[in-house]
Image (cartoon, helix red, strand yellow):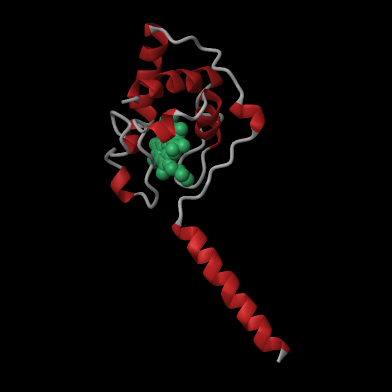
Amino acid sequence: MKSRKLILAGSAAMLMSLTLLAQPKPWVVPDSFKTMKNPVAVSDASKKAGQTLYTKNCASCHGKAGLGDGVKARSLKDFPGDFSKTEFQTQSDGELFYKTKSGRAEMPKYDGKLTDEDIWNTVVYMRTFKK
Ligand code: HEC
């Protein structure tokens, strides 16, 4: 009877992980990043620099206006997010910096591809998508 109990426990665990998979996975950002301040000041120059970087590296998935509707978005499994939404814009600069730097799954990791300053410039630019 012991094996039957094990099978039952196994199926329950599988069901639970399936339900978890169907939900958007929380993206945990370390506190040390969350509280980081953007060293790049908001200015026309940093917005412009951010826009150039964003158009070149990010718009193909995230869309020109950050709505998650870039040309590549349709072939992705995960929705890249809507950057105009409050849930996105209420995240701290450090959270957006961390997610861009480290990536996960289909979101590329920009650590080593963009300098920290460039990532901060794109953070400044992503703020312009706020509705
Ligand atoms: C190949 C497609 C692709 C490219 C290119 C891409 N991303 Fe993403 N991005 C994604 C996907 C998919 C997600 C959702 C990932 C997840 O939740 O696991 C995401 C998530 C994010 C998030 C977190 C969104 C949230 O709601 O918290 C940020 C910030 C982000 N991307 C910034 C960028 C920046 C900045 C660039 C360019 C430097 C970029 N991405 C380039 C696909 C992409």
